[in-house]
Image (cartoon, rainbow, N blue to C red; front, top):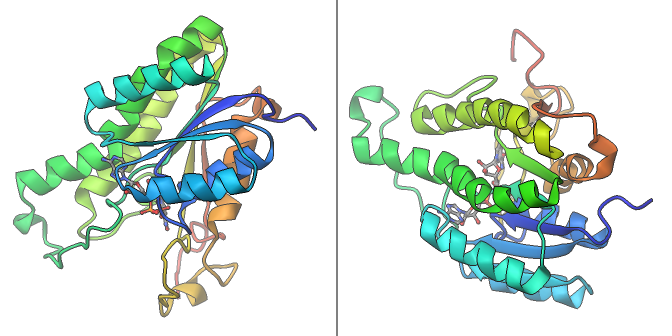
Length: 258
Ligand SMILES: NC(=O)c1ccc[n+]([C@@H]2O[C@H](COP(=O)([O-])OP(=O)(O)OC[C@H]3O[C@@H](n4cnc5c(N)ncnc54)[C@H](O)[C@@H]3O)[C@@H](O)[C@H]2O)c1
């Protein structure tokens, strides 16, 4: 099957060895795509070396994707090197790798403007910036596959304390739908994935109680999310656009979660 062979893919958030971005990059690489991978963390170079050793064509870029100018510069370099961009997987978000989260109040009364702006920037602006920089090339080509990583947190449910994260991940769904309408005129499809609890931590950190409330009784893996991303990035999903696809082991179903 020729799913993404010969395509050029940009994947963001590719620093963590167990992260979703790295799994998406490996999945696309194993299917013959050329990869441009990026993250704010310098660990993106380690992941790129590992994928080069697997025989994939990879170019790594350490970039703060909140800075639109830097994103444009990166995309120019990718185009100089590979000539086109067919696939964009917007995975970066959540947190900056290597920066520990400070314990903080979950009360809205304690939320600062700075924390709100930062949460929206990491989780939404990064997706806008990368799409903004890559989109003109897809329009020229009259072809593109954009896969945005949202979350069940926001569009489906939420947590006390996850104000900016929930708002940003819901906004990614709205952005996906609006852009799908625009992209339809240029052969560009735009879809979003809403992962539930995915085991992306470096250490085998247990999340007590979580497994038992998930109908499939376990956390998901990055590879399972990547399988879905590969489908949405390929020609096999050619008639799908503007969707949010939930991948959460069934967690969104039960009304009583015990
Ligand atoms: N793990 C889960 O359970 C889960 C569930 C739902 C959604 N998600 C989403 O999946 C995506 C990947 O998360 P993950 O669990 O693989 O975690 P991860 O921490 O491995 O991946 C996120 C990556 O984004 C990078 N990043 C953050 N800010 C950036 C910036 N300004 N510029 C460039 N890179 C930046 C981080 O350095 C990190 O490497 C995130 O968008 C996250 O919100 C994860």
